[in-house]
Length: 504
Image (cartoon, rainbow, N blue to C red):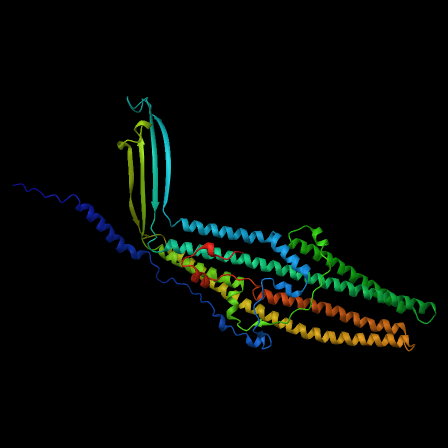
């Protein structure tokens, strides 16, 4: 007797196949693993960087951080106008601004990648098959087809990988925005430094011209003494050498003035003729070197380079999350709906409906180590960002300390040089009084004038260095910018938003 085999229900093989596939995927899920991969970088705590003894008690105070227009403390309206012009017109800022737009666009691309897409298309086709391939009625006839399609695609962000990529891009965009602020601070500092050098060059020109006048007078006296038989040619030749040296110093100072005017014009984004309109600087005394007593911790929120480095650490951290999410299964939803017919008259009939779609699941199993290498790279990127942040923090505190110590030392040197200059001035006055009383000669007066001119030249150099120390300190303290760090941004926005980023 034949035994009839009972056939299983039609839906059971499909259920078994799906269950089996899912089981296989779960078994093989361990093939692509993140085991053993982790970043090694550790950010330095700002308060662990002791600086109070180096800065000294007199420097630490309740002073505020520099204002946004910190250069106004130098007291020269022309400098104020030049920096304003540079910040408005300089093309050197265009690079930083373009990088901001580039990073913002990249963040927009990352945001778009996690959203569903819908596209539409229309196509009209004509097909003619040769009779040698297909008999009538297909062969030899021209067949037309019209297709209207809607294509929907979406890959749900199950593990937050796409959001992490978006947040990483936002972090990079914010870092670029802070870099643009730093570029403006650098530009204003360079204008101030060039202007200070211009002031020093003018003072050097004054001293050289006075020395040339003194040496010329000394030569005239030496010539008269030689003609009278009271002296030989030695004094005359020495005075002529002094005149030539002073003339060369004056020429060098004039060339320096012209070069600095050209440099300032370039910083302003203008041609060299703009520099000819820059008149002689008139700087006031540099302010005392006082820094806020909340250093070093508060320095983190005022230094643009430190804040930008923190944003890059935050972006690198999100990059690690995105790389880890790639190890997990993903689902893609795809739906294609449209109308297709051989003619426009039948295109909108019920028989013309065309549809395709469904979910697709994928899981990395064997990829040749690509995912682990990508995660290792993300870990290394994070370590690099942390190291750059630590370096920026240490460098920032180092710059503040250098500027404070330089200003303090220069103040002492200026006081000593001023005391020496006053003594030389008194000696010149005494020599002049003796000459007028008939107790001395003009040679005594001219000899007493030389050390005075040398000390005035030294004072001009020290004052210029002291102005530079003021600029360096204001720049080291952040230059009055207020960049938004990751912590402040996370408090003000529940999710990353470029619209809330600081405007450079």
